[in-house]
Length: 166
Image 1 (cartoon, rainbow, N blue to C red):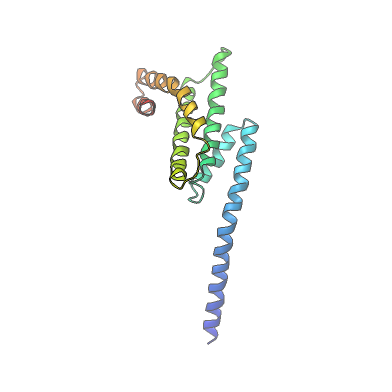
Image 2: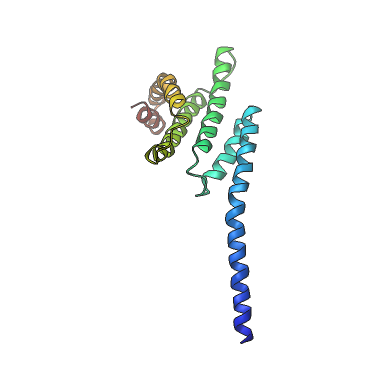
């Protein structure tokens, strides 16, 4: 008889801990999103991307369009940094210039995939119009990057960029 009371108590404690974990996860994720937004405002794209990559591992947050929008913004910041170096005739990383453009487009597609589900549920997409414009603007860089990598015989990178261009 005493064993069953202990077992019942352990089950209740386990259930309580499980419920507590479920309620804390979204709160922690919201704090992480705020931190990502702060990093983006401070132009700390690498720090923002580290947090995004952590959140991408959590199945609760992979359906958040905002997460992918923040990742896109981080990649755009990185791309703009390389573009600025190019414009100012400073040393720049051509591969990074093209790869950040590719990553921005990749996150745009992930964001759009999440928003497609929202559209099916009757909600309006929030990022679609802006993302379509960015994809249009990045097309020439993506295509040029594919040709640049191909000329250097980096066929894997070239194919990634050319597939995105298509």
